[in-house]
Length: 72
Image 1 (cartoon, helix red, strand yellow):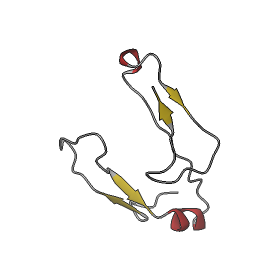
Image 2: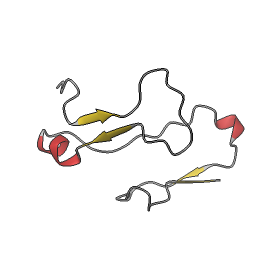
Image 3: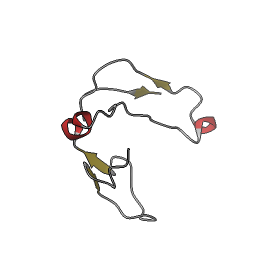
Image 4: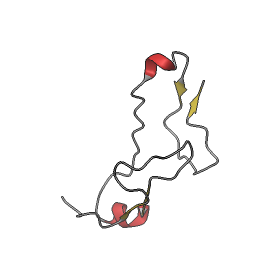
């Protein structure tokens, strides 16, 4: 299924420099669930060698700016 971007709002442009904490994208969870899509989120750490002690939490309903999903 392709939504052609519907239900998502990109907040930055490709190639734009961002800093830690900069929101990148917003999505409408109810809209996506209504389309039968899973709303799980994947967080990829591409430079894990720099953070050997990082720990990720999973299996819960996370709340923006409230739930800790990674710790060092």
